[in-house]
Image (cartoon, rainbow, N blue to C red; front, top):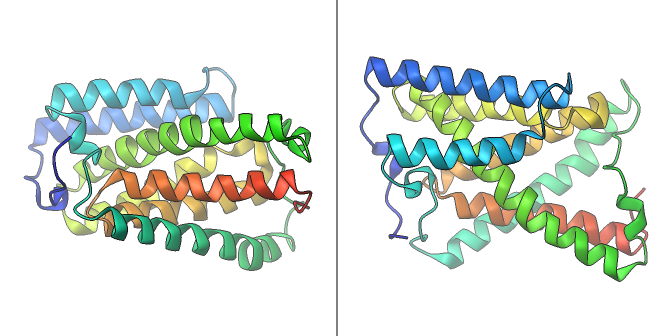
Amino acid sequence: MGTATDPISSPPRDARSRWLSAAELAVGAFIVIGHNVYHIVPNEVPILFVLALISFRLRDGSWTAMGLTRPASWRNTLLLALTAAVLRIVLGNFVIDPLTAHLWPPAIAPKGTAAATHNLKVALEYLAIVWTFAAFGEEVSYRGYLLNRAADLGRRTHAAYWIAVLVSSVLFGYGHYYKGPSGMVDSGVAGLILGATYVLSGRNLWACILAHGFIDMFGVVCVYFGWAT
């Protein structure tokens, strides 16, 4: 993988390419909602992950175009990821959860997570899932793929990327439909933070992957020690 560049300054798409990106985004949205809401499509993450790899290889020439490049500074990337993770955890616990509690029941936890309480083997298995399926898989799918294809529609301008952050965050909320309304809002906010991290890092996907991993790892640790409510 090469060194980080500034993908935000990359050339805008022509009209034909933007139509293709619109089609990819529409298909991606169908896959997300089709699986999570209507259960007519298999799990969206593996499908979007494969589509992302194919799309960026064929249309952009390399997977580095989605942000899988070596950061200019791993230290700064790590600090940004930690900051994003802390912000997401604090907002979730002290702002989003209290606000949504006035409207809906608490978010539904993923099935089986309670089994990790005081069970090191199960907790380690969940950590493996966190860093592979969730952190790497979901970030390639949502931030690397869907966010970029949404930004293509706006000619890859700086404003287009921020609007794309909103679009991908809505889809990320639907990606957690099983959690109920409170969980969808909470996940949508998480998507906003991860999307903002993506843009602020110069679209380096490793910042999002690390942040996502730290967030979910914190959740697994809380469950393991019995701190989760």
